[in-house]
Amino acid sequence: VIQESKLSPKISSKHKRINVLEEYKKRSTNKVALNLVVVGHVDAGKSTLMGHLLYLLGEVNEKTMKKYERDSSKIGKSSFAYAWVLDETGEERSRGITMDVAINKFETEHRRFTLLDAPGHRDFIPNMISGAAQADVAILVVDATTGEFEAGFEANGQTKEHALLIRSLGVQQLIVTINKLDVVNWSQDRYNEIITKLNPFLNQAGFKKDKVVYIPCSGLTGENLLKRSQNILEWYSGPTLIQQIDKFEPPTRLLDKPFRLSVSDFFKGGIGSMGGITVAGKIEAGTIQIGENVMVVPGGEQGVVKGLETNDESSKWAAAGDSILMTLTGLDIIQLKVGSILCSVSHPVPVTSHILAQIIVFDVKVPITKGFPVILHRQSLNEPATITKLVAILDKSTGEIMKKNPRCLPKVSSAIVEIKLNNRPIPLETYKENKELGRIMLRKGGETVAAGIIIDVSKS
Ligand code: GDP
Image (cartoon, rainbow, N blue to C red; front, side, top):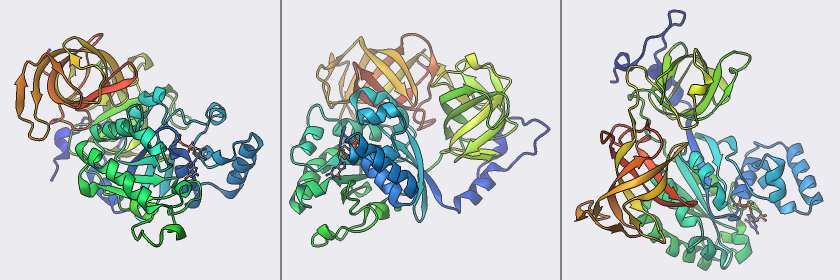
């Protein structure tokens, strides 16, 4: 049993304290809510697939869909009609790429999903990270077209990078859609060939065998999304995409930890017509209710929670796992930055500029050496940092130390390193303390070079 009183801050006398854990239990008997991210190489068909799925699920009305069809054929891009369901701005439409993380919601029989659509274009990986950092589960879209799967999987493709990224951001359950099978005549051989190439890689990246499921489909024709395709009856008896999505297991939430919310956006003005400042982000740990105080880190200033919104509905409380809007008063907007943490006043998150981390080095062109400059990403935060010490190279499967004080870290190695933030201390926690805030990613020159977990923050 969780001792709520131990963690709860004072609450202003105007508000009656809510037993959030009780409320959470009641809510959990309803449909489980999950955050879903869709990743994959550019043009793999992510937007088309998800747009079509949302349409088939009745989330897009007929009139709007007809308008997308008319407008897209007017500019000679009729195949983009479904993708438009997700791509909201004109610029994205005319360029035919998804630039930002658009959010949509849908429900299956037993689940409620917030869809974080991730862009496939290389330049937009930082946006994808903030989407993926909020994800519980993922769909990896691969293009079955001859040569296209290979292009996405090989050196400069994003299939591997995205898979490694979502895994290191904590996503454990994955659906791989073998998409555009209409282009290759619904070939079973092609379907199997892709699985044979992809599966060893995904296992090596840390996805457990029973947590990865491969679904053959076409986002464009809609086959095997909601209804089984006639074209694969002979060789496929597995689930449709939506049946498999409905089977995603609920993630474990850090309800009994002190409150932590990582700020992904903020603006002046409150929810509705309320005054104040509104913050958007995901609760990484703990619970919150109206009337409670929260602290902004870095900075240490405090504000009072005046309004909360989860799933587009105003609420008196919210809990770990919820993506929320929170209106605060008593706080100056200059105190906030994207990547700041709002946290419990009694158990604030530590601020540090020097950490020890265990990392996995990606498929880097140049080995990592002492003094290597990186951008450190943690949820929506990104900060310049330097790898100041190579402590040890580890055995990837056992985690045992293979070599102390190595001169460099080769690609696809596992290691312990010290990292120093260049400009300022930032809120970071060990993975042991908080598995959401304890995960980091290191990027350089537009590429992810490593990802890992924080094992010590007391180095400063
Ligand atoms: P994204 O970059 O991954 O979001 O890919 P899009 O959804 O924008 O699709 C890229 C292109 O592939 C567009 O021209 C789509 O019409 C096309 N496409 C997407 N899915 C399919 C499919 O299942 N079959 C076929 N034949 N084309 C598809």
